Every structure is written in structure tokens, then in C-alpha cells.
Length: 153
Image 1 (cartoon, rainbow, N blue to C red):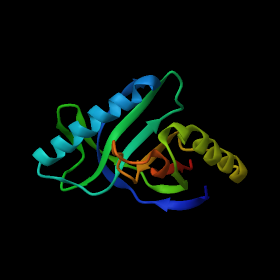
Image 2: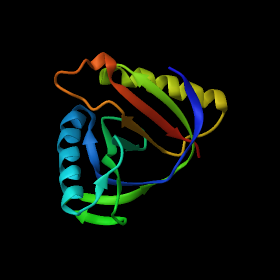
Image 3: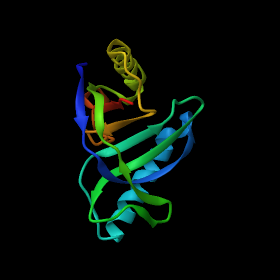
């Protein structure tokens, strides 16, 4: 996996954010993405990019995670239910495109972390995954494309 430094734009995202046990992440994502998509549509806004899993702090048995999508046509603030619209800050970040099953993302993040150490820079304290390939029950997990983004402090 190639990992290099790229400038990330600040984006407006609609998300559901909460602490989640790591063994419950898949169920959280399934519920949150549907809730966000429905709420964004009801608000008359639109989704303008792939699904995002935005992590705050380092995962342990639980992780503080926000799941949602980049959006346009809505201002930051509560949107409805558990959905809120926030800014995903941009800036310099290590970015790599991982191709493979979600179960292998931990090892891929290890590669990104190794590159961060090589650069001698600190992470900002958050990181995210952009699910470029929309998962499908009929799809081949080995062909999933996930963008890994680790912002610098």
C-alpha cells in the first residue's frame, strides 16, 4: 500500500457519533449510515461522497466513532434524531488506499502508523476511513477500497 502526505480539505459531514464497543462496530455502522442517509434526505440536503468512519482517540475495547457522509446543502448543527452536521477539519495527512477485506484494516493502519513514525510527526488525535467501494452482500471483500487518513498535528 502506498502511503503519502496529502492535503485534505475541510469538509462538512453529517454523522452519528458515540462510543461503541469494537465488537459492535459493524452493527453501529449499519444503523448509523441508514439513519444519516435518511435524515439528510429529509432535510433536503445531499450526500456528496463515500461513507466515512471518523475515529477520535485510539481504539481500545471501545472507540469514539462518528459514522456518516460528506454533505452539501446544510449548515453545521443538529439535523434530526442523533444526526449532527459538523466540520471534518482538513490539513496535511498521511493517506493510503487499502484494497482488501475490512478484517485486514488493522494491519493496514499499522503501515500508516509506521510511516507516521518515519516522518517524525505526531497525529492530530483523530483519523478516518473513507469506504470508496460501497459494501455489497454479493461483492468480493478482497476488492473493497478504503482510503485511510491520518491527519498530522
